[in-house]
Amino acid sequence: MSGTKKIAVLTGGGDCPGLNAVIRAVTKSAINVYGMEVIGFLDGFKGMVEKDYIPLTLETVSGIAHTGGTILGSSNRDNPFRYLTVEDEQEVFTDQSDRAIENMRELGIQGLIVIGGDGSLHIAQEFYEKGIKVVGVPKTIDNDLSATDVTFGFHTAVDTATEALDRLHTTAESHHRIMILEVMGRYAGWIALHAGMAGGADVILIPEIPYQVDRVVEQVKHRYEKGKKFSIIVVAEGAREVDGEMVVKQMVPQSHDPIRLGGAGEKLAQQLEKSAGMETRVTVLGHLQRGGAPIPYDRILSTRYGVAAVEAFARGAYGTMVSLRGSDIVAVPIIDAIEKLKNVDPDSDIVRAAKAVGMSFGD
Image (cartoon, rainbow, N blue to C red):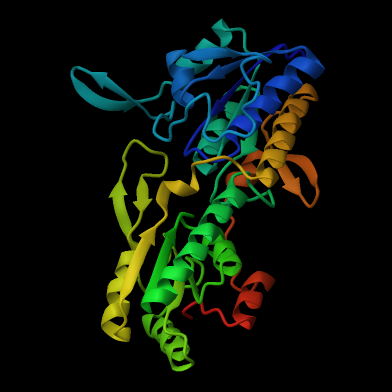
């Protein structure tokens, strides 16, 4: 067990379906298999800095695997290495990582499990480099972490987006409209691609394949000429035109990634109404993709990840992230997971399959 008697767990970054299932698996396997004590830091890394936590017991985590959200709370703004504090009545960013580490020592915590995406795992890596025994669990609906085939929460987000497309189909056909669904994903098009294919979209626009508006117009008009007087378009929030920029909704300076994307769907709608002459409506799915209960796939994957994270601690595999490779869960260096984003390959078989059945990417 490498001397580990007490561990802490936290959920950082944006929430997603499956977080509670991981917390449950970490707690139950740590207690049942290794006799460890477990605590949960509240509201992400903020709990580490402020020493705000709750004990996690078998009773605490009972019956939460099927629920959405996180019983620990989360935050994507409280980076201990760049923590917003008030000095002389002025807001400043200071390094509070040593304070967080001292809190862990005072609580007798020998290890930390960080459940998070790219931003949270960058912070986890920094703590590992300062001597903290860290294991990461890959969480993001965007599915953009390298070194793992799938992040938990992704398939539930795709399920939500696909259901939205199913519903948009009927109203689009009834009113002979172009319906645009804008989905999340940041700089990767995984949600748009998978939901678009599952939901029978006519056009899928993703960051990895810059689009031309006239190509989208061609697809819409071609369908109209064939008697299909409506079109369904899925737009990733990071989609952009050839030689264009992503549409930025706002900036959040306190965040690890301060850029908040949004508005790609509305921009495209205005262009299509002008060029195609068809009534166009936009639905921004937004945080509906993060909320709600995880589908069975994510409940199972989250449970496997949580158990694997505790096992990694038990064998001393610190500085690693549990990862799905094929059908197996393995531990890989966190640094391998965060060194670059995992993007859609424009030449991949899934993109080729979408194009083969008539879907356009605007290229």
